[in-house]
Amino acid sequence: AMTGEITLRGRVLGIGGLKEKVIGAHRAGIKTIFIPQENLKDLDEIPDEVKKDIEFKTVSNYNEIFKILF
Image (cartoon, rainbow, N blue to C red; front, side, top):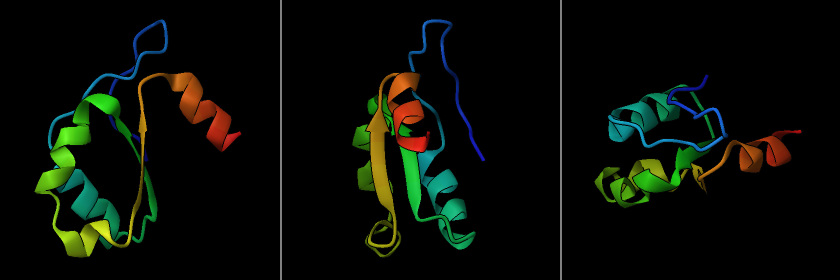
C-alpha cells in the first residue's frame, strides 16, 4: 500500500497522519516503510515499541524508491 503524493518531476511530498499510518502498518505486519524526508521529524511521535520492529527509509525523490524496489 502507498499513501502520499509525488510531483510530476518525482519529488516525494510530505504526508499527514504519519503516526496513525505507521501504527496501522505495524499491525498489518509491515516491516519496511518509506517516508518522505519532510516527515523525518514526525518519527519522534511514533511509540518506540512500534519503531523497533520497522525499518524506515526516508526519500525525497521517486527514483530513490524505484532503485530499492526494482
